[in-house]
Length: 291
Image 1 (cartoon, rainbow, N blue to C red):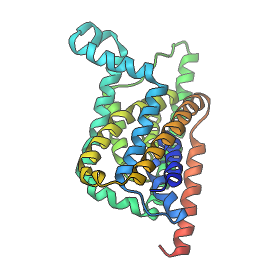
Image 2 (image 1 turned 90 degrees about the vertical axis):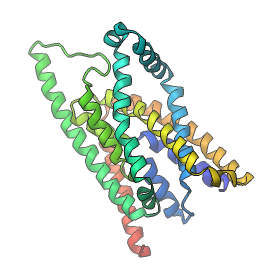
Image 3 (image 1 turned 180 degrees about the vertical axis):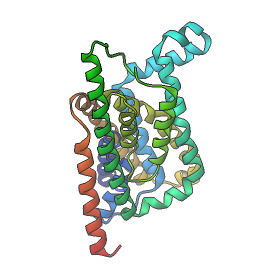
Image 4 (image 1 turned 60 degrees about the vertical axis):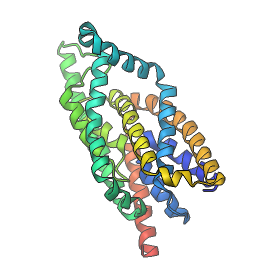
């Protein structure tokens, strides 16, 4: 793969992995728009891995607290009861199971969608609908919560205060659906969190943290599956993968810091509008090219 193309795809991956606009969908649409060959899945997985490193670079303190709380809680009953990050670690594990199962059971079937931009455009419309619905429902719940606070009841402002095990399961199921290119993983998980009454900022942070085990699992699975193909890569292809990885890391770092700040005061409907615009462009071009 040419280094310039790989760098462009890396930048796109980094910005769209955590923005609720479907990174996998963009990695289908961009080659379609420019007439490039569709990229192999192992390259896509490498770009996703880069964004995990960028997430760790931004949220390393929180990631470390969760990891430490999990292993401490295994051996300490007191830590299991008192450390809220232990529960967060369990929420992440529980929510990761549906996506892992979906990836394992439907991997070959889903892979076929990565060469079909028209399906991706349809799934982008689904993502937009999820974002609009999640934000609409979240606002209504927040309005009721504000009325309750005015009545004299104090809101729990502790981080991840509204989470529960059953909510983690539902968010995990929504993440499993996002295995389809065009359905945003972050968009579906954030919107589901909002629908369940979680604060926008908590939903965004949990969605980011939830990406770590899923992407790492996909990387290990795809590396094993494509081991023979990877061994045959030439120097130019390896250089392209390295360029894509670096640019995905850098753009992912910028995107994460932006989205964390953005979500504190602004809603995500802007991203829904973006998804609709991109989908319309793909529909028009697909009809024009009769694809």
